[in-house]
Amino acid sequence: MGQSFDPKRYAVLVVEDDALVRAEAVDLCQDAGFTTYEARNADQAIRMLERHSDIRVLFTDVEMPGTMDGLKLARAVRDRWPPVSIIITSGRLKVGKDDMPENGLFFAKPYPPNGIIAALNDIAAQVHS
Image 1 (cartoon, one colour):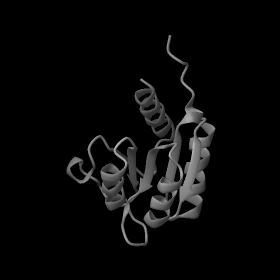
Image 2 (spheres, one colour; image 1 turned 45 degrees about the vertical axis):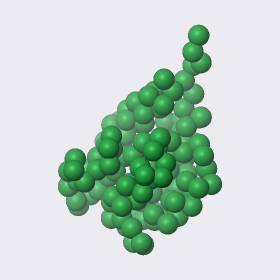
Image 3 (cartoon, one colour; image 1 turned 120 degrees about the vertical axis):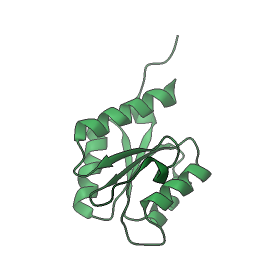
């Protein structure tokens, strides 16, 4: 007998330097039932990952100020926290499969909210199984 799926056991880390876009992404994840943390750059994101072991999804923009962009952040997370799933988004850059870490997902902005929710639910279901 498996436990029923509880999305609140899995947290999403939203990394986005634009405050309005970040707030919308956080609301989207919270409305889908996920605990959600936020960071405005990669350095903050790394600190959040070090502090919160419940983070299972990195949802990051590519272009942001700081020591690394979203793609470098995604690769760092893949190396250091292999179980964390990665969703990358960008409004200007087209990210190809070769640019992505293994099993990463890419959504062009403006991304479809239902697509993000479906991806989060798919990830959570895989983590649970």
